[in-house]
Length: 225
Image (cartoon, rainbow, N blue to C red; front, side):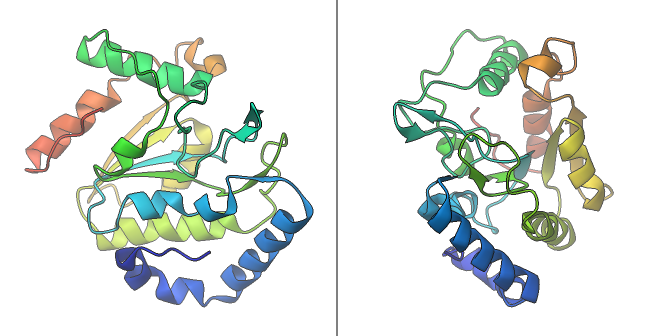
């Protein structure tokens, strides 16, 4: 169940040996044996498989995986905010796509909510908790996923430069306290969920064009959103 990507393995080998992580993996294994949990077990570390440490340019932080099922298929696919092809686009992701359209003054709206093409461009789509019980949001917050994902954010902050961190909502902003803002570019706004977005805390943040402007200024390839 540990991350297969070699670049992450090189940076996280010592983390995998820590007692908290060994215990976390045991607890996760027990949860999947006794309850229906999402994403599929083989997709728990998908964010790291699709975006290597070496290629990473942008980090988006979510809270925990989607906990619902549509037509007997789980929504969560291991990438925050993302769903597999054929799954209805969730409300938060619809608002993300709407803001992208407004930001770039375009009218294209995706028919799929699969964000794998973002990950392959160097975006780490990281949930704070990598697992959840079916129909029970934040049900794995008692597990020590936060210790692991905090260490990921800390390691990226310490060992890379000029990474864009997109922190949407209060929860993500708290996770962002570990980021060295003298080395990295941090953008904050409200969460794209309908409750936050409809109160004026999401739309108009222009995070997507601002991200590309920063990447361009550092001679990095811009993201095709």
